[in-house]
Amino acid sequence: MVSWKVQHAKSCGNGMSGLPTLPPVDVQNRLRRLAWGIARRLFYRPTPIAWHGWRAGILRAFGAKIEGRVHPYPDVAVWAPWNLRMAPGSCLGPGVICYNVALVSLGHGVTVSQRSHLCTASHDFDDPCFPLTGAPITIEDGAWVAAEAFLGPGVTIGARAVVLARSVVISSVPPAAVVGGNPARHLRDRAPHEEKVLHDLAH
Image 1: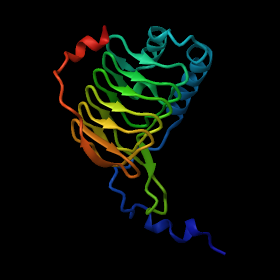
Image 2: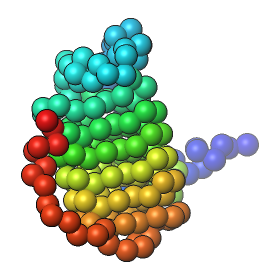
Image 3: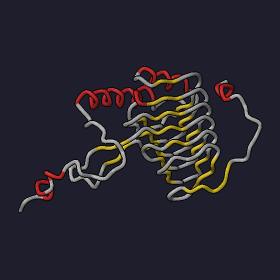
Image 4: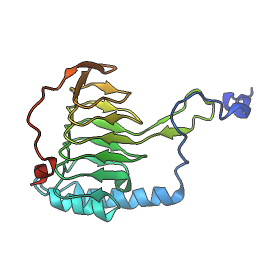
């Protein structure tokens, strides 16, 4: 019997996913992630919680673009540090999964709370070849992603927006919006307040 993959091989590339197709993971990428995995187990994961500067330094050594004081927790799972950008005062909380096959960018004062999942990649399941797809995730200044939320590929969370706990966000969120649910929907706008200088969050 001819396998499904063989039967449909000629139709590869006919999927309907709206996400760009990403290049296959090559040997160089795998070796780079192997080196990062070893460093993470030996020098990143076992550190005391307060050693945010030390962990930021390790992330920088593997290509992360980090400005000022940031707060990456010890058990954050970063897939590729070279695809991570953190502005001053930003935080990746305990147990966060940062599956950054594509770029993940955190603005000033952004908080990503415990066990949230930032997922930049997926697969085009309408294409028989099941190619890897994805797009960057951007979380703008002052936004908060609450505990165990899921952010899908290509999502932008606007400045000061709030994603409530365990929400599933598959489309971009406007600035100052409060969203929740699965899929996340707009609930209200965040109450206005006297704006702080976001750079001060790094001090």
